[in-house]
Length: 474
Image (cartoon, rainbow, N blue to C red; front, side, top):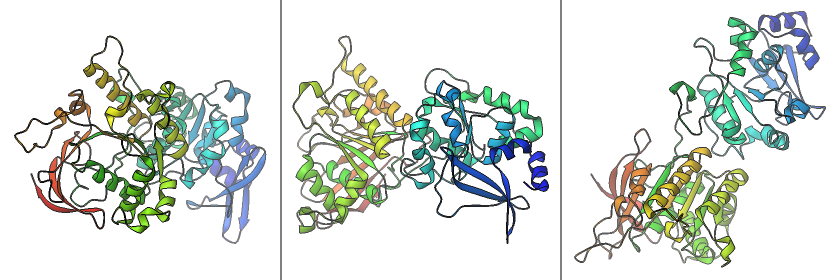
């Protein structure tokens, strides 16, 4: 390593001797003298990152895999025995931590993204997690020591989802520092150690001080692709929504149209379908919604491009046997949904409908108590796995003089908990059963979330299986 590179490392609080032992060298070419950082996986160098010290310019080996820097620290017996593993956003922060006496430290190879990955389980930028998955699964605790700026918070949120928030801790930087390298330069390596040793667990339950909560990333939202409804009812991962309406009012058609649009936008999802036969009915209707064709058009009756999209983005949770030992309870459904998050990276879970789940109340539990406990489980799943949950629930039979009025969320059979605990509420209603217009009311948007409460009238075109804004009113 060139003497100027040793000096550069030393001024950044990194021990040059430790860096050389790690394998860092000077690499010279026509563009200049680069600091070369090896990426070693199971003893074999598979990539390098090169850095010019005269300016912040980086590059990596062409066509080389993305691998965690210092990957092989995961092979240490101490890590398997429970030693925490620190993850930084860059190699220089990692080497600062190692200089401070913490050898079990990794760096992501490609920095922080500008925004959350739609599906971090599939995103190529997180290839390094999948490559090391079996070793990462053995780690008991991760300290996410990524940068304290907005991209760093996005990276921390993605890593927490990939690694499991229950295993993750975060650190808080002094106001004038955004990473551990700056902490070492301003306060010394002892402060680096103190911050790591005092890392705080991600809040899961219980009572906390405000300072215990990490700064959240920006709220993620995906529009549902229907003019007039996009501003009212977006898909927001981590939230719980209730969708309701009387039978025959068009809520299933509207739901399938939204799901088709979201799949086309790349959103992976799982649908727990209990009232609609998966094949051929659900399959045919989703094809029609994806193609924008009438349900019984020839394209919708045979395999085609829509099937490839559904194969990639859609998982089905269904009860396919009458075995009493495998009743589709809410607990069983959520276990399957967790598998879908881990295996398929779903961002949306749809349960249609609520009344077809096998509800097993405790002996001393009222229906209201059971519903409240169930909704808490659904919301906990949504928050923990950053996955939106849409629950279709039927209202009680209408009391009417001949033409039923639009139900409210408080009319749902079971409990007012549906109205009180939902983040979003959507009501679908047709005042005229002869025409093709449908009124859709966004009846609830929890404070601070995107969307707004309003009613829009949509007109359904059976020939294109699509909805268009017809008339909106407050």
